[in-house]
Length: 186
Image (cartoon, rainbow, N blue to C red; front, side):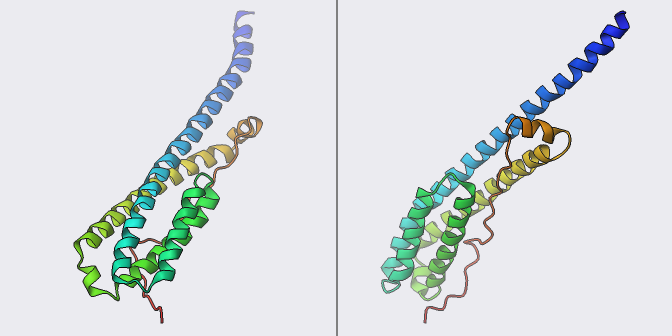
């Protein structure tokens, strides 16, 4: 009777252990995603803080480019207000990066601005921030990938479904402020 009891105990105990371990893994992965999103949020805030200084510096040289300044300022406000939802943040960031590319394209028309030390420092800070955003985005998306794999593969998908673990969205922002476009405002 002893060995039979051990086998029955193992048959009951092992699935419970598997469920607990899988649940805890899913929770840990979800928390990694939230932590990684917090890192992205921090870097985006850093970018948002740099934008007014960048706009003000360029504005001093190119006062007649009001439309692009207004657009960058508007999109910055929109991004700050929409922080949190990955899908909406992605859409807002794509627009903001495009507007920043236009703003930096304006610089090409002003050689004295390209030599301005304050502008060069701001541009360097923006590039560093963009690099940090990209690194944070890769880390976040790696965590999302691991989490989604766990939620979608058998048999852990059964546990994920039973406990309401839902797929997370990737943060995809392809354009980069490093790539200054050809600007034609004529």
